[in-house]
Image (cartoon, rainbow, N blue to C red):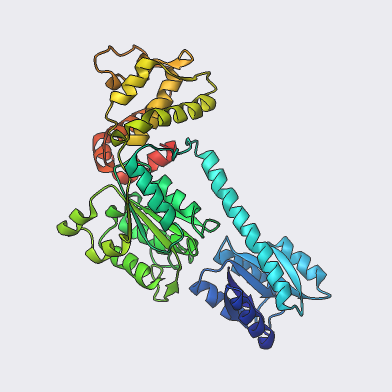
Length: 446
């Protein structure tokens, strides 16, 4: 972990710092409250070991200031043997634990190991809660497609390396899920997996989202804030649609990859970050280099391991298995006794070209489960575009039905996004900008 030890007894401080560094922790020492706050302003820490008897600071006020600097910071207070009442008050104010002084390095090791395990469990629990609450069906890695099989094999080999990975493929092919698969099969699986969508924010806001900012850097920056890079330190940073990254931000990302260094917006202090970068794009970055919208040197740094996600139309042998996996998920979610597809529905699924790939298949299966009136999904339960020769069922659409405007908007956005290859095209058809489309897709979990 990244640990800050605050103690005015320098001999004890130095001994503890050196011992914990030998154990593989990143440890910094501070002898005063002022120095501690300065260190927290410069570096992202997981844990502070805080002596409550510093000569230059009110212990509980300093505890509050440390908590304000980073909501995810764990604080362990150090008290004298007769300081039980002080320890109890510190716990009441938000400290995680306490230890009595004088302490040994072995005692601190035991404490850190326990806190590290708890942090890992909290992180895994948060990820599981996010997956459960996202209402998204599981991604199936079973495949008969040789390109997909090859991508899985390369991903498994590259997972434990620190090399950057570039995922290429059309929208909806599962690049973000594949990035998480790589992370979960790496040595950093118990560390953070942090996602940033490059088209979702303006270049200025994306810079502050990525690197953090200091108070006063711009209107609304009322306190120092750490960004996604700091959160991903020790783990994986996933940049989705990196082809949309502005030219102003590209040199900063290149420096992060080459030197593991960055600055927050509005400051000159340099910070270190040990991250594994996975990037995804639906455009040809070599074409972007030729057109002058993407830096060639950045492409070289990103493209150490290149994986291409094949479109669904090139995976005909996987379509029915994927469709049935989605059906099982949505039937359970909707509490409907739907068990499979009819033979005609199967043939329609296989004939269709799936321009929206897995996302389109998922959306159509979800809709079919909702529309189905029998145990098997019939051809008429599927969108008419899957069988152009038949007449659409009267209840095929939801316009004019007893549904809310919110549901109409959600259904319309899902279908438009599934039909178009890029978010630019979908946003243009919908008459909104990409940032608005991103917010609506996140709101509706599309």
